[in-house]
Image (cartoon, rainbow, N blue to C red; front, side, top):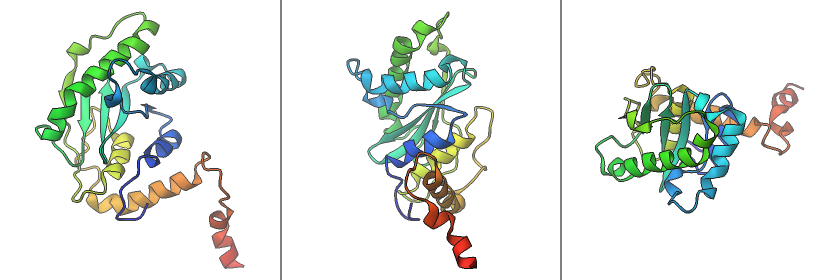
Length: 203
């Protein structure tokens, strides 16, 4: 992850698989759902549900990419909130005006198809509010993926995120995430050239 590079689409799922075991996440964008292709996201719902029953979670987080832009869509089940955390666009921007309702509608449709049959009750998503919590903003077009991953670490309906970090922290976050991705158990390459580097230097 070079300091000026965009975070590529494959990087975010790798990061999420290793780091966010305490959160319920799905890795397929529900914006792809059109009523006839539920299989593209069903495996994501089922995988998350097998690890932790979705309806028992405080929130279900969706890293969403549209074009090359990443943002967080979080369904806060206990707080009854649809939260959009976006480091570039705001609530009234054309970007969100175009995708907000389809995203919510697709989530509700998929939830009722996949999750509701396993529950003893039905959640009324009409009671949920849509919110855009104040969040740190990027000052370029490259860092949305890094902001997304930090949002997923700290987002909670009760947390004030705006002053939690800033653009000035992004370079260090890139280094942190690159290290975590490289040393994840999911990365099967030989890591000894890095892990033993300082031992070799000291010899």
